[in-house]
Image (cartoon, rainbow, N blue to C red; front, side, top):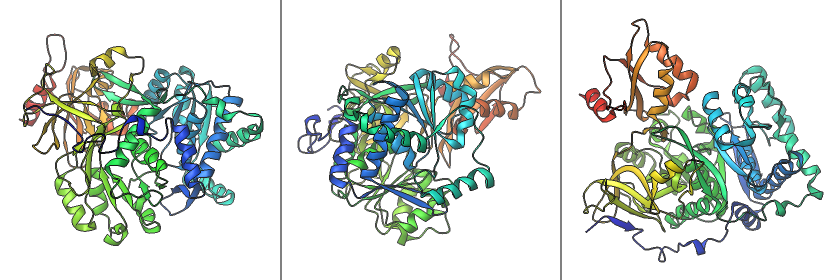
Length: 565
């Protein structure tokens, strides 16, 4: 018997098939949501202080169409052009995302914490012609915009869509009192101004025409993900892929989540595929009210959201669950309305899950997925949860466990997890070699080592690839090595992932130096200048040699064994 399996109820019994999707594009999904839930609250931005503002589904559509008109009529963008969005969770992020698809353009989500070096790579590689960027990090764009193809810049604020007086006061506090909004040299238009200009031209614009040529197979998003070959790659995700994955998530939770009655606390970042596809898009299709927290760090930032709203839907990662339980305000009553609690992005520790259930009365259902399948691939069914396992294939998905030659291995034997899913990417943007390496004969090779039990539940036991998983984010060791190699006095460097209590894994750098004066701080300073904080090594150790192959490739497994030894 081999380990090749689908959802235990079968595709048809689970009600899934591409022909079952009620909408083919994200534009149609928004229009349908407005028809069903127009006057209901769609999104709320809530700040750590408790200050908040809400927009209905009808208002979100109105804002999105105004932005689409601005992009097409004022800026002259065309169908298929790329627009980058660099923002934390707030209404402005969602308006920008939906405005981009309403314009017939393709979005690319950028981590707001990226360094200018990382930002430049994504803007250049995705061929972004415009960017919608949070004002908190506008100065990062100043350093790279001239070397990118970006021609138009729109700035947004976390306090956009607040009432005018409150917005003015909050902006003053952020810029003048807290001094967290830097001065930006690059010419830009505010999102408020862009929407006003779009509305002024709405009467003469043909908004439906912008997406007349957009099909379910058209690209909707270039979602970037780190790999083992260095810089991040853009996974090309179609409208159909994203909507399929959102539907897979809905079907897996159909027994506990209710259309039009869900209040979802969105603490995971929307620029990450998990929150984008499985909370934002999936929530929109069922009329959920999304409570947007710009940042869950520190965890006290979520206190006001839990106190003000009866949260029914909460998705997090292991470190967030653990941190919340350590908060002095954490109380079981704040979680009394939760019907669904999901975990993804990083391994969910059994001890944390058990403690969470004891303290809240709610079980954590762990899933497994990746950017390349638009989010979810497997999930623990409600009522049949198995701690330590990542569940069964989502409806419509198939997984196999194979050896290095791609042959199925016997049940109970570890092997590489490969998959097929309606949410699978079309490939990596402008990278046919990486695409061919990852997708073979229609199967996505995950690089993860898994084993399936007799009931079809998958357990991830190791990673075949060298990727480091830090708090749910993929980190390429090659990218860190590249940054460290620029430091004078560095002869050789090897980077691996090590266990970390807070982030599951953390990067560790082993450096051969020619100059004894070279310090750990020198290495870290170089990394901070080029890499996002979570990519900066937690450990730097100077060694006499780093094990490599004859071709000079770092032998990470040997390095890892030497470290643990």
